Amino acid sequence: MIKAFLFDMDGVIYDSMPYHAYAWHKAMDEYGLHMSESDAYKYEGMRGLETIKILAKDQNIALPSNDKVKEMYERKSNIFATFPFPEQIEGVYDLMTELKERGIKICIVTGSGQNNVLNRICKDFEGLIHKDLMVTSHDVQHGKPQPDPYLMGIQKVGANAEECIVVENAPMGIKAGKAAGCYTVAVNTGPLPNSILEDAGADVVFKTMKELQNNLPSLLTVEKK
Figure (cartoon, rainbow, N blue to C red):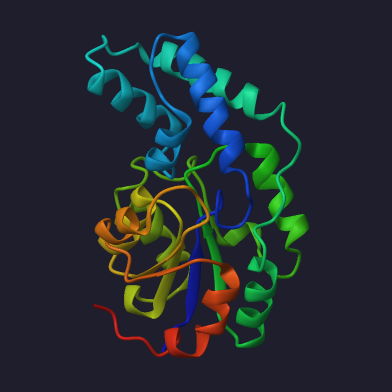
């Protein structure tokens, strides 16, 4: 039986990815790194500092110092902060409400360190999301696609991996959920084709949160592949 759902945040709870995509593209361009807005969806879920280091390596650019990497990520964060607060992904509040009614725990597992968003989420989802059931970029040494964030989430909800379902929208997060041993659902809220999410290991791909909610009875008795 499923005891907990572990949700990513950007692109799963909030429709924030278009803002992140622009901020990544603009900030990295200022420092001589190429990152298209569509590329942002491929790296989504990773910790920002790790993303920058991978970009530099892949583009054969000398790896920036840790201080420079922090400066680059701070620039990206500042650009992101100029946008209005993102809207909730349609249907996610209703889904979480049903999960609570069924006695299923909810944990947020995000690679984000954006404090304005992290502080807002408990207010927007009062009674559904609690601060003690959140894993952020500040909590783990190795972010997605490594399993560490979801392993911590599993620990926080007091369950086993096979008793948890991960809800993701990006390849890196899907890989992390699968590596942690969880049944992993993708809700494709971005521009990537379903095939990329399937190739990352998603057990099932839905178009919307409403479609996920409609399939909830079967998901709650699913056997992990």
